[in-house]
Every structure is written in C-alpha cells, then in structure tokens.
Length: 327
Ligand code: ATP
Ligand code: MG
Image 1 (cartoon, helix red, strand yellow):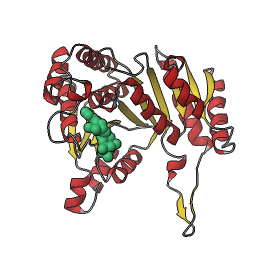
Image 2 (spheres, rainbow, N blue to C red):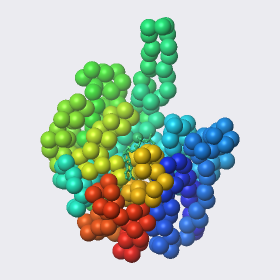
Image 3 (cartoon, helix red, strand yellow):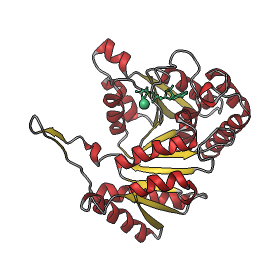
Image 4 (tube, protein in one colour):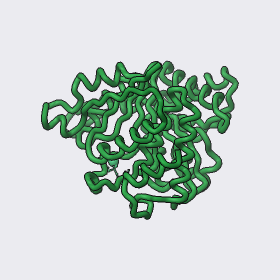
C-alpha cells in the first residue's frame, strides 16, 4: 500500500532541509507518493494567503505531512496545519549525540506536550487601554487524551517505562490541577508509574542533572519553553525534530524556524528535518527504517561531515549525501 506524504517546504531554509529529508526517504525505496504544497511568506505575497485551502486539504487528506518552516507567517501556517492533522500531542525528543558539543552530553529526553489548549487556545482580549486578558483553557478530555498517548508511548517503548508530569498546580490550582489530576488518574488506571515536578523546579533540575528525567508530559506553554531549554542542553536547534500526532494523521517538522541569517546559502544543517522524517517513518510503522535513519545520522554526527552550526565546514548536500551513503 502506497502512502501519500504531503511535502511543504515553506520559507527560508525549509527549502533546503526538506529536499535533504526527501533524498533520505527516497533512498529507502519505500512506496511513498510525495505531493508538494505551498505555504508561507512567499505564497502570502503572491496570493494574499499564507496557507492556501489546497495546501490545508493536502495535509488533511495525506497519510502524513513533512513541513519545513514559515517566516513572518509562521502562526498563520503552522497552527492551522496542526489543526488540519487534528494533532493533540507534540512529541519533541531532545537527545545529545556523540560528536556534538553539548552543554549536557548526557541529555536524553522526550517531551510530550499538550498541543491544543492551555494559553495557546487563542482567547485573548483587550478590555481597556490599560488591560488585556488571556483565558487559559484546560479540559479533562484533552488532558486524558494526552495521558493515554503517554502511557501507550512508554508501554510500547523499550527505552522508557514511566513519565514525569510537569505542571504548576500549586499556583494554577484549577487549570493545572485539572491537568495533573487527569494525567495522573489515567496513568494509575493504566498501571504506569509517574512522578510530579513543578515546572519552575524542573527548569533548574533539568539543567543540573538531565539524567534524572526521561519522558516529560506537560501543558502546552510549559512544553514549548522547556523543550527549547532542552535544545540548548544538547547543542542547538539544527538537531531537534518534532512530531504533531493526531488520531488519523500527523505532521513532522524541525523545531527550528526559517533561519533567515543563513537561508539561501545551502549550508543549513539538515539533521533536525531528517530526524523528523525518521519520526514519520516510525509513526507510519516503518520502525526498522526509522532506526536505520537515526543510526546513519548518529554516525555522521560522530564522524562528520558537519555543517557550520556544529563547527564543521560541510554544506547541506554533503551532510545529506553522507547520511544517504551510510544507509
Ligand atoms: P524564525 O522566525 O523563522 O523562527 P529565527 O530567526 O528565529 O527565524 P531560527 O530558525 O529559529 O531563526 O534559528 C535561530 C538560529 O539558529 C539562527 O541563527 C539560525 O541560523 C540557527 N539555526 C536554526 N536552524 C538551523 C539549521 N538547521 N542549521 C544551522 N543553523 C540553524
Ligand atoms: Mg525561531
């Protein structure tokens, strides 16, 4: 059965790192049909719309989407795209690889971030010249859905068997209290061990001793900020992949953006996007291929060639070719 993969490069280095990931996927000889869609600043300039309906439909109807980055229009592109794939969890692994200069080389974390509500649910108001408000939305149903995913994730995995719930329920008693109760309740039902960490304390402890954590389940904003913090621990943005998972669909993208300072030069690090493609392979059931891609990436990170952000002088194509070669 052939899978239909929506491919959306977007702007900036998206146009360089997505073709690199496609090269890697094509070298695996799987039965993928790649269909390209447009989104981002350039499309907005040309048509007035950052995310044409045709691209939204392409992502909604595909088996999975591989997305690069969008510039100024990022929020107008990625938020609706996450909605198109009905994604309720954002998976963000943050792992240090041998050969990469990392602040904490022992870091090996996976963030499972709630992806639909919290402070990102869009309920903001200007009430007067002096006053703006934000409504923070937390539902038991979305929290439980994330928790069921987290339990299945650790149960299906050889590397993990419990998770930490990161929250601030001591202050946000109703919203994070609801989140905490829902997540811990589901974990107890499914027989998965959890511990709880307050999010401010987590920020300190993960810097001092990341090895005490493994899988982290957290609300939307906390997951966004804390996973970027973890990116700093493992050696930078060029390495971090992410997955937005829905019930019947999913979207995979590097954590980094369009990197305007290096765009167009062919020197972007393709690793984050190639590892995102590996997450996609895993999600589609190609577990062995996913492992092979990760192993090839690992070997190139250890032995080179490396791009400039990792202290090397190779360009995107050389690194991609080296990864394809290892496969
Ligand atoms: P955007 O608004 O699109 O997020 P940005 O200016 O925040 O753009 P990012 O893409 O978030 O840029 O990148 C931040 C920094 O990290 C930049 O200096 C960029 O060059 C670097 N960087 C990000 N991704 C990569 C990559 N894949 N390879 C090399 N450097 C990268
Ligand atoms: Mg950015």
